[in-house]
Amino acid sequence: MKFSELGLSDSILSAIEASGFEEATPIQAETIPLVLKGQDVIGQAQTGTGKTAAFGLPILQQIDLNDPHVQALVISPTRELAIQTQEELYRLGKDEHAKVQVVYGGADIRRQINSLKNKPQIVVGTPGRILDHIHRKTLRLDHLKFLVLDEADEMLNMGFLEDIESIIKETPEEGRQTLLFSATMPPEIKRVGVQFMKDPTHVKIKAKELTTDLIDQYYVRVKEYEKFDTMTRFFDVQEPEVTIVFGRTKRRVDEVSKGLEMRGYKAAGLHGDLTQSRRTQIMREFKQGKIDILVATDVAARGIDISGVTHVYNYDIPQDPESYVHRVGRTGRAGQHGVSVTFATPNEMDYLREIEKLTKVRMLPLKPPSDAEAFEGQLTAAESEIGDLIKHTNTEKYADMANKLLSEYEATDLVAALLNETTRDNVKVKITPERPLPRRHGKGGGRNSRNGGGRGGNRHYDRNRNGGRGGNRNGGGRGGNGGGRNRDRDRDRDRRRNNKDNHGKDGNKRRFTIKNGD
Ligand SMILES: Nc1ncnc2c1ncn2[C@@H]1O[C@H](COP(=O)(O)OP(=O)(O)OP(=O)(O)O)[C@@H](O)[C@H]1O
Ligand SMILES: [Mg+2]
Image 1 (cartoon, rainbow, N blue to C red):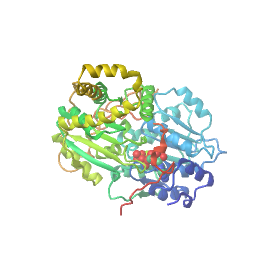
Image 2: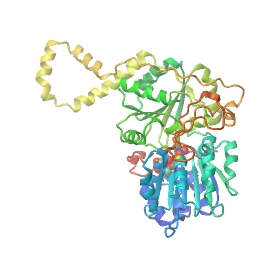
Image 3: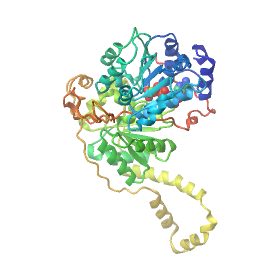
Image 4: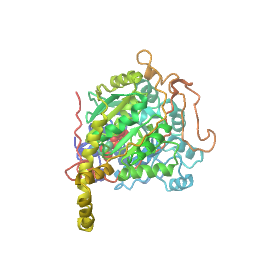
């Protein structure tokens, strides 16, 4: 559907044009008119299908530039996502001169306070820091017209719910439009959400599958201690270009990223124990292509939009099926194709089936490549690398020595040495085994963990907040200690990538080819 048929103003339409969007995606086509009409909306559509613009555009259009109050608040689960959303809203609202400010933990609060004095009409932020500003009275929400929970099911989950409730209390009940967006929306979480809404319309883009069919989804059955070598063998044969590897714990992320570096990959780890400046640096380098493999906890699972991610590897299978949907959704975005590979240890196979039940996609089994196949892959890569090397070599400069070497050694030996140098060393890497996920019992147990003990275990919140609740909470009041989980829920923050033009071959026009299922 054309954007011009949705009731959007000329200046918004020109920002859309400048973004290179050709047509509205289904979620945009269906929700934009509803939001313009003043309705509360739950917007559910597959990852990478433009939900940000779906809520962003109609809000931007309705911002009153003569009103100095904060009129819209977008709450995001991570700092990287908050920054990314601020950048997209800023870009889309540029012609309208909308002021969009972002607030998140781990960054200088004074600077944020100064920016808030600048009277932004739209604020994007993470819950902890938003509350902090509310308590300091540097953020007032009493004139709020739009409240958006992006990644709404995550924001309404136990870890965040209390904060969200506290924030909502600061907003006017009358005249506030509430919008929830996510690719996943479990019914029990939706029930929590509708309590904050007025007669909401649930727009669910009907697709046969919860994940986009642009992603080829595979799984590999593998023993815990074989995972690392198996994964690098897959790298050899699949030749991923821009890759995200998800690990279950921070230790895992640290060890896997270091191991990959030892083997000569350009890899870096991202998790919530890193300083914010380090996190920002890693995201920047990944987007610039200085890093090929981002190893991350679930902190990078939701919403992050990085152009051209070709492969997602789940080094550890996620415990929640929803988390799987978001992780693999970092690839196959905006019409591009992607591949995901999920490792499951033999007793984690039930989790795999549970994921398939939710996504309605059967993952195809892959056999771990043998040493010989991996070596073959390395040689193929070396062949093209050597071609490149020759292209970039000033042959004349080295000719004399080259001829001398050729007279001293067999040509085959020389090239073999070059190949040996060009292929990767299989340095031994030891990864500390993580406890496998607890065996699932009975049917549907996984999701229920949301209401029971499963999730409570080792939460880590990255709040960096002064006052009442302290910086880091472990364990939280609810949930007990089931599950042995150590999810990096650090949540707070991404930014726009620069090379957006990668999207389409035809100039900067981008068109979706989302199949609208039934
Ligand atoms: N109509 C459109 N045409 C082409 N590209 C678009 C369109 N709308 C959004 N995009 C681009 O598609 C990409 C994905 O959008 P976005 O991040 O909003 O997806 P999402 O649905 O929020 O995904 P997730 O569930 O992972 O958060 C972005 O790069 C965005 O700029
Ligand atoms: Mg999103």
